[in-house]
Length: 96
Image (cartoon, rainbow, N blue to C red; front, side, top):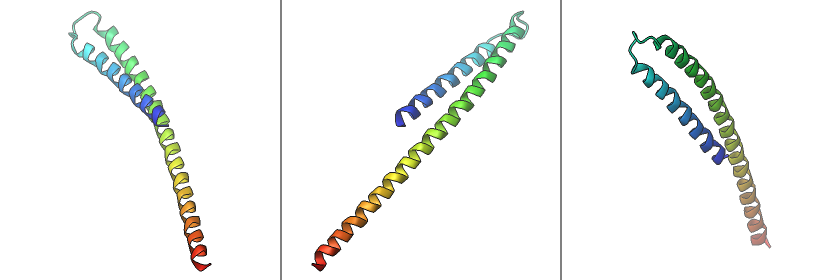
């Protein structure tokens, strides 16, 4: 799950970088440029799509972290059970 989380984080960072680059390109253009409106429409579409994808990635990251939390809770329960059994064995050994 850690590898998946790292991959999703990298994917989100790249998506964010791509959207920032598109915005920076638009900011560098003059509003009187004939291609400005077409570029604005393209950047809006790209950022809308990017926002949707970032939302999906964030949801996937939350699911992965829930899996990690569940695994950690299970391991914690197993360790508690082992410790209880160990204490019980020690207690029985001392009573014998």
